[in-house]
Every structure is written in C-alpha cells, then in structure tokens.
Image (cartoon, rainbow, N blue to C red):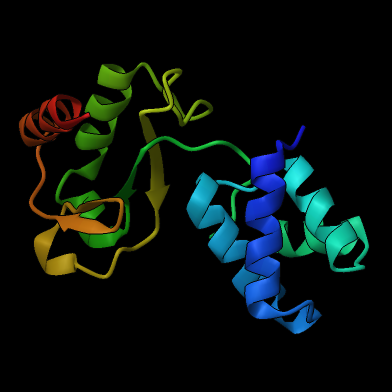
Length: 158
C-alpha cells in the first residue's frame, strides 16, 4: 500500500523527467534510490501514472539486474566471486558475513534491514582481491577478520 508521501515522491520524480515513457529507467532508478528497492505498489502506481501496462513496468524492473523488487538493507555489501577474488579466498569472507549476519544463499537481507549481502561476478578491482563494496565504496584485500571489524564499525555508526 502506498502512502500519500510515497505518491507525492513518485509524482515529483515523474514530473521532473516528464510523463515520457523513454524516461522510465531513469525514473525507476531515482525511485529505487529513495527506497532501496521497487515495491510492487510503487510499480503499479508508476504504470498508472505514466499510462503504461503493469506488465511492461515489471518487465523493465525485472530485466535489469540493478533493479530490485525485494527490500534491501541500509548497507548493501557486494562481494566479488570472480576468478581473482575466488582464488584469493573470497568464499571464507562470504561465509563469515553470512554466519555473522545470520544470512544464507537464499536469505540476503538481515531482519532489521541493516545489511544486504550479494555476490557478484566482478567488481573490476582484481588487484585488490578479494574485494567487496559497501554502498559502492570499495574495500580490498578482505579477510574474515577484516570483514568482522568493518561490520562492527558499521554497526557503531548506525
């Protein structure tokens, strides 16, 4: 269910880019930036607002990997499992993250919506392997110990 505040936000974003269907990706990106994901009700509202079919909006939102229909945490941790990172032991770092945050390969976001952990094929920083990003900030040469220190620091900041 959409709040009046959410409707107002969406209305502002659509007005900013015009009610032009060629702007839909930019509109979805900006709205996801505000909510960290695209709730189904938001997609329905945008479809109505822009006179598009719901299936077209859902098709766009599910086609592009950067869009998420699932709620994400305040801190989005992406851990690289590309060749360089894998060889330099990214899996023990991932295992430590999952154990510490009570996550699994099926459950990616903590119950308190503080952390989301995702594996990616490459972050483009092979010289820093194993590498992670947290909200797009790069951290290299990670170890199970250093990821625990980083998590504790993030918890203190929250």
